[in-house]
Image: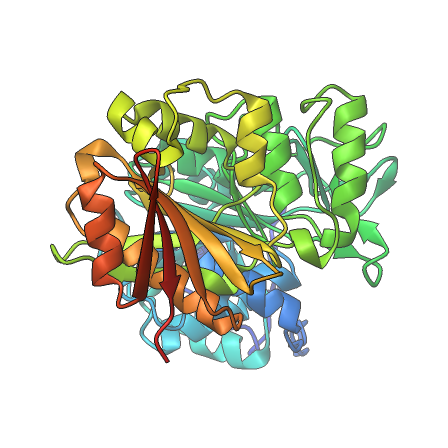
Length: 473
């Protein structure tokens, strides 16, 4: 009304009365047209199992008290259902959707911890069902503001713990993504996507999440590609992309070089496309030319083995299988070990850990061997503090086991928890026991095995115990 020469207002009783910036004084209206008509609605769709899995992965990144922005599309809206067990979430978004309104109704979103607009859900517009429109009607907890407020990066910088959740059509192995077009074929235009994905990074403890299905067209096309097609609109450059989430996991790209980014994204691509992505990445010089890879089920990451356990000191630790993208983390771990710890682990004084050697730890056949890592630190800056592994000997139906713990974390119970979990998984595979080689002087390791509840047999050869650790039934 401030810019228009003529203002025409339609009076429609089906339109909800919304709090915020949408009020117009009667004296600013030139013509009033009374006309009743139903509002356009967005029909609800049933979330697929794939989208539900993506939602669960996104939910792992959203913490109680966060303020969220959710982009347009069936996937981001459906993902909201996975946040049902969160507390005290806030909303600062462009689009207010059915999914967000559901969380407001159930009390998950109450805006009680927002550092601005306390107690209010802020958006620029709403698209949803009639039920959602009725909820907005004369609701003082909802405020629709102008785009120069909702999409302002300066405003977002004042909101602590801002989390932007959006989707994309494709993402390449460097982290560039498009939500507008695939090549020269346009599916959308420039919207508020970039505003929030960049604005959230100005927020204290803010984060951005790009969620997408790993494939399209009934699993015939990968959404993770070696490079975006010619003429594609780059919605997010590689510096904008932090978390990428698919049904196969979470990749954190911030601070990583191109090789690390490529391996992280390949790890969450659909398994049938990973060999192709590996070969394309090699051709383009994005990863090592000798990068090993195990295709199919044998190399598919078993996310069901991820677990949290508490040590004897009461500290909760995260144990998970090694990922193909863990090479740098493992390198840091091994180089953090003292000479004594290296010798005890490898019964060798060799200290170097080149790429060729590291591949033996991160590229594994999960059906025949297992490497577990213990993760410390936050999700943005993970640190490996312990590594345990076993390799199956099919002729004896046993497995050779070994593990190591960072020097500053030893005697805290991490080694015992690693062994206990490895034992549980080995029994689940039907194995009969472990074998291990331990230096005679390595009393701490021997003590851990003695606590493990095995039937132990020992042989000494050249200062090394050859242990047979039979599982008790």
